Image (cartoon, rainbow, N blue to C red; front, side):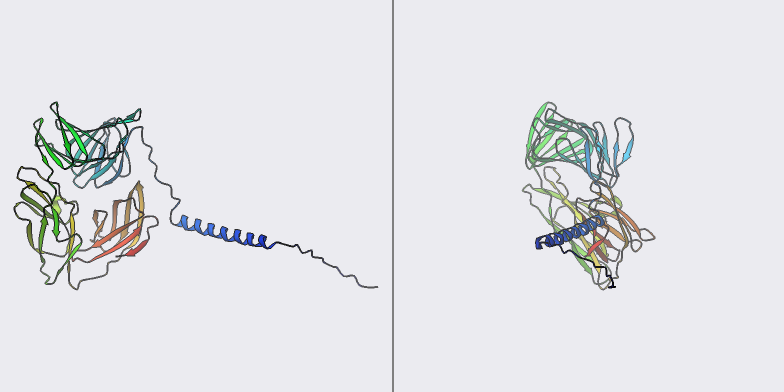
Length: 412
């Protein structure tokens, strides 16, 4: 009897080469999609944007620095701004000595409320394609920038006894002094119509006017801010002796108006806080100033001028310089980095470094605590930011930090 064996028959399918290529391509694409999704999640690409529910026709604070407060007209409650928020008609914005706020109105105009200022939102409404914006500057400084406004838009700034209609494509600056009851209007682009006591006056590009006692007391060409020369922005001066350096400050005039005097300030703070100002010198008749014995550290300086007619220019954008001691360069380390998004373009940066170091970024600064911990608020639309650390000896270290994942991208 012959043995029986089980037989297995395999039927081979004939597969086209294009089918194999298609399967391989599908697997490669799937792998790439998976890796891309993992990388995007790791870098917070899918983190939800902060969405603020704004009431109809409300203005909103695009960014802020320092101490900014809003007094609600409806409740009389005063809130400290800690995130992107809205401002309704009747609300009051108050900035303290270190505060600044940038506000967008319903007509697309942007208002910059400077430190130590009080601004009331009178109207911010839109109807039938037009827009009505009206604000009242009680004290301090306000910058208004308009671009192409909607049809039938009206943008008005009240200051003291004046009402100024800001035209499209205009940059205007308003200064009000609540104590002296005096005001100033500067136009660097475009034009405005100012009405005081029933009389309308048009101010055009590069013109200045002062408002006193219910009338315009002067109208003339705008006095430009002086242009700093030395020390240059970002300059580094070396203290070779250990007893401080002598710094020569100099500047130039780009204005054609005759200048009577200059005013110079040198500070340890970029916001020129009162307790950080080292030099506060006015009535200078030359375009230079000398300061001796300046020790290691980081400093800021600015200058403004007064014309013979009495007009005072704005401050120039401040310049920064540093004094370092030769041969002194201990390493500055930072760890435990953290980034918290407060809202909009506002972030809180935290970490740990040597106690007492000065931490600066985006014009804001803070000192590290006794344990080296720091927490600094900044405002930027970018995805990365530069953070600088320095001590009293002039030693410094800089880091470029990712705002997406709190990682240090590079040092400088």
